[in-house]
Image (cartoon, rainbow, N blue to C red):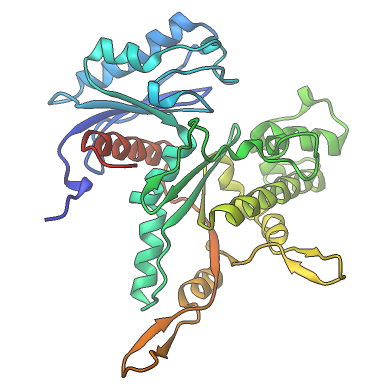
Length: 372
């Protein structure tokens, strides 16, 4: 019988470590068996931050009926993840110079510890338990021969997190820097990276520039969203333009990643909730053209990109254009779908939960000696 990770009875303690919250839990199979425990990270003070990490896992462990087999969790940004060393992270300044967090936790809890990038684990969770199996089941249900194996997972929030999964294998890279999409160039501000616009602070900065306000006078991204949707009063044109800029920069970044990786995209993180505001500009950029030296036009992307939050777009992606072809010299046929296509969807899962599932799968596969 084939191994099914969803039926695995081993328990893994997990953490989604952000700059503003540390969210601890535990997973068994596909189920979160401990309600999330949120602690302030104390990220400016290393001693307090490390104690917060230990305390969070101790609280989770005290709620378990049996001993966990591993700890697996996500940190934001690049680090020496295979060796469990957290280095210079903007959101966690106390780790500057490098801190062997994994080895410390292994010593304290006496179980294996696996640390990875949050964007990677978001993508891994969506590839194994979320969006990817869902879209492939839908393709199978309509009789399509198409099957997506590559997933680009993107978290939109404090920054622009990206994870890449190819045929159930997480692409981490030789320097644990695979998928560091935040370092792509911002097309609206070429001297900066994409997070100049594609981030929570990017939305605020953009709104400040368009209204002439000082940044200190600008509200939260949620308030800017509420202005754009007419829920509260304010400069609606400026708020809509801020999300349009966000979408244009995001669309170009996704186009670069799709061109190199050729995968389907799922968006998560808090700002993904504003999809209806930034999606038009995002798709406009992805569907744009290059002008060649001969004066012709070349599509920005080879595959056709569909809005999978739109029923028509999802249907067109699912239906494709498959047909039967006769195999020369035989009486057999084969199915052929020449329609190259991809799409962008919004995750239907809590970002912390799907990161936890990705962390669980990463640990279990490591313990099983599987290649990921």
